[in-house]
Length: 298
Image (cartoon, rainbow, N blue to C red):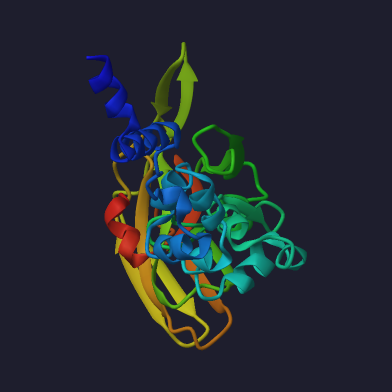
């Protein structure tokens, strides 16, 4: 038995087998390739085809995806073609060279106030469409300086923290104009209005419609004009007291041949055979037509 045991360990083939087994158990197992091994440049090429929400989710995977998510060309594809004009108009020209493309996209997606706080512009995250809102204080309202007719009242329901409230007037007219670098596309203009004056009592919203009158007699007329000769108009009766509604004034087309678009618009009911009142005017909105389905309008 001792001879057999001794001969087993003196066999050269057996010794070689034992040595190979020992080496296999002592050496670390080979690691498989993972997503973290991908070059940032390759990852960025993939991220370019994803939407911003998907990019931000994948950026949490590992360092390679996080670094790739900051690549300028990834976010430049999410920006409007004239984003530099938008930065100059809304954020100021000095920021254009200080921010990377991801930071520019993030800034433009916020509601950025400009023109002394009377306007706000932002980028729709899903469609890259540019939206604009103009406060009532940025409009030319007939009789606004006479407190017998109009008053500015503070409210949390306004996008600008105050609305113009009409008590009573014979000649109702609101005009406005602006110039803005809209990207090429078709846009709709709306007036955000409410019949009645809303307030809170014991934590609950109530709307006083006591002074609402005259809007059922004749329709309100809306019109828009552009600097390149476009004109659109519409009319409707104001109704649905106690609710904010968007009244569609018309559409206009931007072809991209000009760096900016000049637009004039108006809302009027100038039949002086009767008075009208009890109206809240919050703002004027300009949205890409492709976003209209998500808006309440008339």
